[in-house]
Image 1 (cartoon, helix red, strand yellow):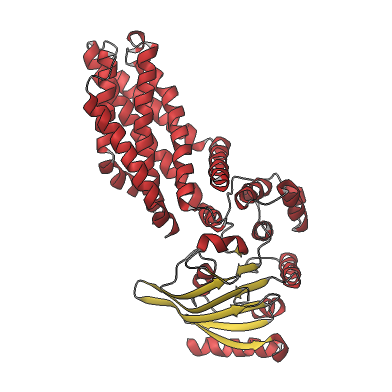
Image 2: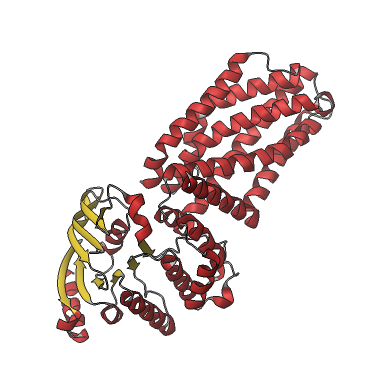
Length: 230
Length: 235
């Protein structure tokens, strides 16, 4: 157990160190996300439709932004491991592939959550919703985004591991997007509900979001060994 | 016996790359495998390093079944291949510290500092690896391979792209590790350096391994001639 924790914490620290050292991924995803928000704000503004429509628009913008920013982050995260054979170096330390996978999920979850914490208030402000959203709703919104991001990273890390191993970064979008549709659907519906009504009205969408995220995490954890060791 | 492989075979698609290879390496022995490009040397070394699964065969490292328990035997392996197996954005010190933590190396800070001094990188401990020349990278790779005191060393083309000083350093280090009782496998197509480093010689031609001689039984010139003849015969 101690060895597992040591491996996971060392891998997470390394990922954070690498990302904050180069700042390439952070800058790329932040600029990309900001651009998407600004494009939608300019296209629909400056006079926005009523609150219900604004809520739906903002939910769409947030999920589209985070899904594509997530693909950039995941690709970059696994490409770093393939360049210069670092992943082979890690495998040679005797680390269990599942621990490597878990560390990747946690570090990518951290990066995307950081992005969401920065971009969400900006999107709410530009799409004219910040003044009607309470702190409580904002916290619930971050909770919904975090669950969706966990599910996205859970399956995304596994597929990024596969796609970068065959040298096709663009392959990730093709294989990942169809699989995360239930997460995007559940997450977007919960986000609309929160932004329009201040609460998650239907338990079905939240259940879908949580259920899929946990199923993906468990399945991908079990498959990590086959993907990373092959 | 440090390492013993028998009947190791590997195909990429339908093309056989390594054919039914047997190899054994004892403590204090340096086995040099000579072979031209595409002979299957790197694939064989990756299988010995447990990074690639053979289609068939057995592999034992320090008496343990390496195919059944790859995680358990990897700590006994120190590997130098074409890639640094590290992060170019990190300095050699940061890389060694990271990999040392993963291996659970005791007194890690001291070990990193000592190793970097031994391989002549003391002045560059905080430079990112991506700024290093080929020779400096090779020195780092040797330090990385030795970090956790492995008993088996696998070196793939350790002399390629190096200047005379760096080649001499690699030769000295191999001799030092051999004297410390490690079992070492080197692949190379350089007969002179491979001869100087090795104690036993094998040829790898078209995926097949053939025993040649022990160092005591063959002179460098004779080995070079024999190798040339065997490679020319293949063409």
